[in-house]
Amino acid sequence: MAGTRTSDISPDLVENLVDEFFNQALASERKLQYTQLVTEVTRPAKTGTYLQLGALGPAEEKMEAQSYNFDRIQQAYKTTLTVSTRGKAVEASLESMDDDLYGIVDESFGTPLVDRIVQLREKLVADAYNAIFTATGADGVALASTLHPLYNNALVFNDNLATGSLSAANIKAAKLKFMWIRDQAGEFFETEPTTIVIHPMKTYYIIELLESNLMAMETTNTINSVQKYMPTQIVTNKRLTYNTTTGVSPWHVLDKGLTRAGCVLQWQKALQLKTWWENNNDVYRARARERYAVGFRAPGYGIVSSAGTD
Image (cartoon, rainbow, N blue to C red; front, side, top):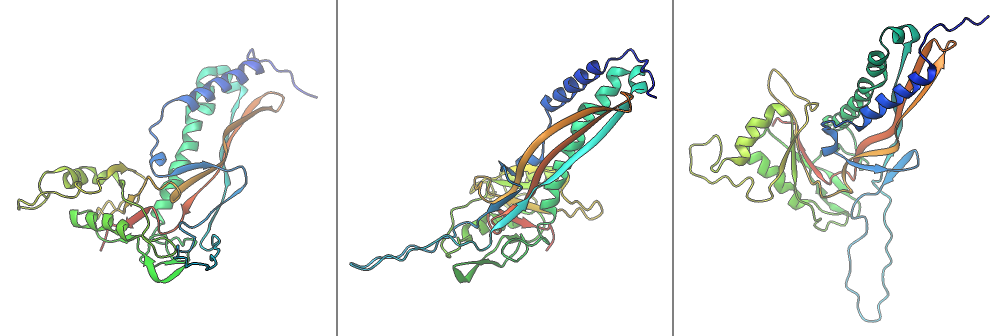
């Protein structure tokens, strides 16, 4: 036999409050770090396929009366990302809401819930960057490698692996690697560095490296040329790997203008909240969920990375 509900709180009031606090939390401003490291796309399907860049063969001279050679985009080295469901389920008892309705609703279904969802996004994007030296890309080598093969030219390789800690010389060397990136036919590919990504613990140091008039950490009168050619914006991310004992941390140089390469956040479903009552309206439950994938596409393009050591 069902019990009698004795609370003065109506189910409709709880539902309206949950909607209000959840929507306020969604609309509130947050300092998002992952958005500066990814290109966000929306795909209706569970999987997204990304072709390698510059997949057509080279153009050729055509002699008089000679037939054209018809080329097709190659499907080699294509990246496939599959979305997963990420979310969190919460509940609050009627008794707890009797004691503190607004506080319980806010803490259970408002900002803390949305924060947990966003924190997972931040972690997964940072994880993708932290794994770039060991994770294998669609071309069969590590995402940061000196030997990215080119489908239509077996004699040339793309190199997006830098070495060494942050220094003026190493930053310039990493930037210059963009000048040697080629498309899949071996032709020079238009790309240049726009952004350097570091752990926040390196911020003061890199500002000294990039913004001093003369070469930092030296006793010469040599002009600091690091930002004179191909200047880069500094972006920090606290979830990048950082060794608190040695101070070693990876760093990355990106071409943010190359939106067809680099790290992608592939959305299928944005954050949604489903709510319901359980146990004769004694417990109110909610499930916040979203569906997306995170990964690198077009391996060898759009990023040059250093593990922070020689």
